[in-house]
Structures are given as structure tokens and as C-alpha cells.
Amino acid sequence: MNILVVHPIYPGKSEIKYLPLGLGYVAAVAEQAGHEITVVDMHNMGVTYAALERTLAQKRFQVCFMGGFAMQVKGMRHVTEIVKRAQADCRVILGGVGVSDIPEVVLRYTGADVVATGESENALPPLLRALEEEQPCEDLAGFVYRRGDSIIRQPRALAPQDLDALPYPAYHLFDVEYISRYSYNGRGARSMHMLTSRGCPFKCNFCINSVINNNKLLKQIHGSVQEAPSKAQRFRSVDSLAAEIEMLRSRYGVTDFHFADEEFITHRKRLEEVCSAVEPLGVTWSTSGRADWATEDKLSRMKKAGCTYVLFGVESGSQTLLDAMDKNAKKPAVAAGLQAARNVGMQFIANFMVGHPAETETSIRETVDFCKEQKLLFLPSYVTLFPNSKMFHDYVQRGMDWNWYFESLSTIDFSKRLFLNLTELPTKQLLKLRNWAVAETFSHAVAPRLSGPLHRGLTMLLIVALFFAERCPQSIHWLIRNVIRRLFDFAGGPQAESTSRQVAPNEFGQESHVDTYEESLKELKAAELDVVVESAPRPVEIATSRAA
Image (cartoon, rainbow, N blue to C red; front, side):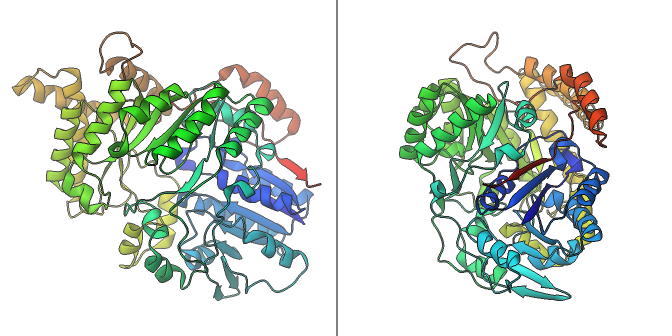
């Protein structure tokens, strides 16, 4: 069959570039099964809906895959409308964390035919075989189906347990040369996301694992599940990991990697195995982990193996709020992990949230005190209601206007704007407290010895600056970010090998490469494709591959 794979747009964060690993894996599985795959990477490459329509006019497709985050569901609806208008018999299949636990809602909102309710690499080939042979498929597990106005549910399918048995993501169908130069979280000349594991042993109630690791909640959401709970965290072999790194380096010149695991640091033995496999390759890398499980020996080993920074999910400096989040973390252990990073010279991002349902003025003030004690800047994202979390399902029981939900999510930048006030605080007070907390930690970092009226005056000045900074163009953000990088070197003076500093979220995103501008415009004109020209334009490339 001819299969169209579309990576839908996310207008709220168009500057973030990344290879969509979920789509990459399902495209590879479909290609391995003998199907011809055409990828239209709308988000990364700025492909317009008009260009998509031309692709559909030029070629017939039997199936269209889409996947992504909740912020992209509105885009999925628009693509579905275009596909169905051009080729009414093309079956549209959706998947990803943005849709998998609200399949009925998404099927009705988008007009798609099928939603995958979990990791679908094992469940997909039988579905594609049935569609190709024009056989009944609505009894296959792992999916929810729409037949007219009726919804047909099947059990949630078994997730892949042997990650080595999966093919690599279909990198050859995406513009890796471009994506790697602008990759979110990247720090090298060419950087790429990849996975060393799937899952996480914890159950933070704002996270997908609060659902995945709770079999009772899974059954409430999906009706039934095909499997007993799989291992909370599944690991691929380090030989497989090293081979994929070598392939990306030799084929695409990628020398920096972000291991996008949900949790990397907890398992000491596993950490050592990965470091031992990666160190001889001479690449740089970064990853995410829990600060309360970080120790000097772990971080030293990671640094020796090429790790350049760790993204710590601190979330809050209030023990009461950490408990309400089901973080299973203690503040002293979090502080010890942050200090361990400083002691070994490991740079880190400290991720904070503001606006959890249990947030109060006291918890925000406790977080500010924690940041001052730990010499941290409070740089939070607003808690946003995403599918696949216990917090989400607790809230939507009250009811939800889904048109408003997907419309609002599609354009939001939740590092700057409150999506929905989940707290008992008045919205105005929550916003005021958030701005004060950010400015207060900045003020303390700039002039820790100031007190009284001078300190309050500096904080007020920073609150005003923050108000305008969050409303200025993206180009000004780059300037502000670079100023912050110079001002907030907590070690003081030139960076020594043994020093570490907190860095702002997104600081390591690749910067613009304007040297390709003229060349890109020429290629665009030659291809006669409509694109959204961003700060670093690239030609639209629609990749097609016929499986052997």
C-alpha cells in the first residue's frame, strides 16, 4: 500500500525542531512490512496545507498516519479534512500521547478513522495487512475505530517488550541534515534525539506514567487491556544503542545526542552500561533524570562518557507540593543531587512548574526560598492539562469543551502563558505570584546582598522587564537569553572544568544558520512549493521510500 505519514504543525512552538520518534518508528515498521511510505514533515519543514493538497493530487494513498502531542491535534483535524476531501477512501490513523487515552473524543473531533491506544509497533502490521487485503479489522486489539457515528473499542495492546527487535526510526524519510542543525535540546553542530529506554518507574500525577503504571486506571480509561502491566521501564541493549549512534554519525554526521528517556539516572547498573558503550564513540550527549537520584559518582561517570548536561525535573521546592504531585521525592535529596552536579562540573537545567492543582501562595514562596538556598533561578512552565495523566483525567470528569481545548492548546507557549487555572488561587493572584517568584530569584542572583527598599526596587524592575520580555518577538528572546547566560554564571569568573551552572530551559537549542538562506530560497523556487518562511528557511522535502 501507499502510506502517507504526516507530522502535523504546532504553531505555538514553531521554532522547536525535532525528529518525531514515534512517527519514525511506525513508519519504519510499515516500511519493513513492504509498504511504500511518503513523509510530509509539516512542523519541521514548514510545509503548507496547499503543498499537502498537491501531494494528495499527485498520488493515491490507502492509509494516512499522524501522531504527536495534544498541541498538534487541531492540525491533525485539518489534515484529516484535507485527506478525506481529496481521497475519501484513505483510512486516517492517529496515535501518540496527545490522543491515545481519549480516542473517542479525538475520533469525533478530527473525523479520523482509527486511534492507536498505546505503543503500536506490534499492533500495526496486522491492521495494515487487513486493510490491504480489504478484510475486517475492527476486532484487532490496540485501536479504537470509528464506523459512521459508532465507536468500536478494542483492548489496549501489548507494548513492545524487546526494543532491540524494532527497526530504527525511519531517519531516511526525514530531513535529518536540517533537523539535526536545529534540534531541540541539541548542543553540537548536528544533534538528534534518540531513546535508550521506554517508560519510567515513577507515577508523578502530571505525567503519562501515572496512567501507564496504574493498571486500574488503564482499565478505567480503555475498558480493558490486553496485557498485564509491562515492566515500568524497558531497556534496549547497549549494542543496539551504540550501533544506532554509529549509523547516525557515519550517515548524517550527527555527533551530539539527546537521550530522550523519561528517566535515565535511577538505575545505576544501567547507567554504567550505557556510559561504557557510549564513551568509546567520542560523541557528546545529554539526558533527563531525577535530581533526588543523582549522585557524584553517577554524574562523574556520565560526564566522562561525554554527557554535557542533565535536565532535572525539580518541579517545586515545596515538600507539600512534591507530595501532592506524587513525586516520591524529598527536598534534601533533590538539593543533594543539584549540589552533586555542581561538585562534578555537570551543567544542568532545573525544570520547575507553577500552577499544579495543589499550588498555593505558601508553596510558591517555599519554592522561592528553596531556589535562593540552592542558588537557582525559578524559570517555570505553567502546569498544562495534557492527556495521558492522572491529573488530566481527574479534571476532565468535570466536563470539557473539546473544541476550545484543542484550539487553545494549538497556539499556547506554556512557558509564558497560563492555559487553565487548576489551582484555588484567583488567576490574577497566581500570575502575580509567578512573576514575583521569577523576579525575586533573579534579583537574589544578581545582587544577593541587597536588602530592604533596594532589593524590592530591583525585584519590581525585573517584574516589569519580565512582562515586556514575554511579549517581545522571538529574535529579542535570543538576545535576552544570551545576556542571561553572561549574567548568571553562578561560579563566578571564567568557567573552570570543575564548575557547573544552571542554564535556562531551551538554552541548548540550536541557533539559526542564516548562511543557507539564499540557497534555500533558490531551491524553494525551483520546487515551486509553498512554505512558511521562518528565521532559517529550508526547502520543503517530501521523502518517499519504497520498501524492498
